Length: 400
Image (cartoon, rainbow, N blue to C red; front, side, top):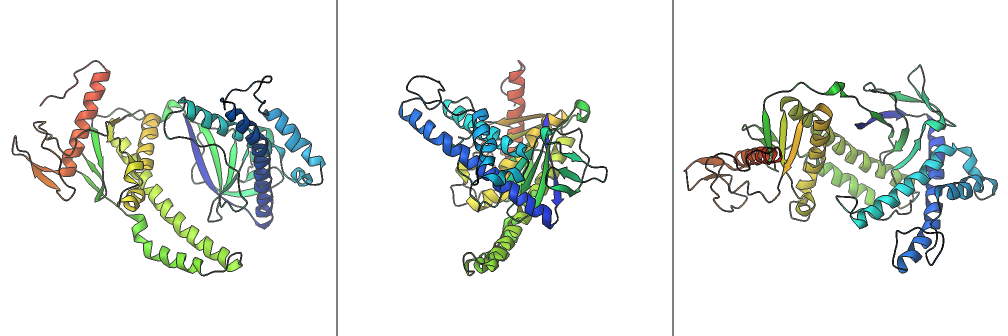
């Protein structure tokens, strides 16, 4: 499978200026290409088919990457308005056109149902005020990692890299990213082999995700919810108020914006580190992991939205899924409409709905006292096993 490895970059002053120039050129080429494609796609949409690409007939031909590259890059460099495009490497500019083509394809596949999951909108124009900028170098750019451990980029120089871990294989491309906190990263996409598959083990676990506890396991273990955003909420409010008092366009406002951005990225990094450590622990200790398919988007519209987004359930479940594939474990989601909080894990009697403040309840059929979250995790485990047995030709309902 393909994995992304990200490392911190520390460019000097001249390299920062060269990267800023590169990001600006990439943004201009993206916007120029999108401006050429938008009128064509809009007219085709009025004719009733926004996807069909034909050279003749009532539909207009959508410009291809080769035509756009010739017009917007090669020929544009010869004009006074775009002659500064020759100051940067041409490979990231050409890669921008490929990325735009992939963005249109994802949008069209999302509308026709070929792409599953959340809907993907049409590509939008990029602004110079966007805090996140990126540029991709493929193998044609002849970038390399020097013997001194630096990342050599064309027309930028040798950039210092902090190698926190080794790359499992040789990468084919590198993406240079600048985030809202003015941090620089090098992102590599590499192929992993089968040597990382862990030896088989016996335990299986069902996980019930929540807010009072981040995760409750079917064996009774409870993982506390760190509430990273809640911890620094007062500091964030203070920094945000200081930002609102600064004059727009001033240098002090730019400094205040960076302080707010750094506070947010510290929260995001702490949350991501917590998710990585916990998901790796669950995958290493268990042969099969089952979770409930929560509708996080719907829960994000309730009064608990801030707490739901602070927990980051979707990112955690995604980590469990790809790590299970990477290390040879089994991962599955059970139906989100499963009555895990209403069903007794001992006799499988459905006891009925209960308000959130009820954390313990007794089964009316077998009189067993249940912890609400632990019982739900056991139901998730049993339902996941039943679905797996059903897929393999076994029984559907677990034994009482």
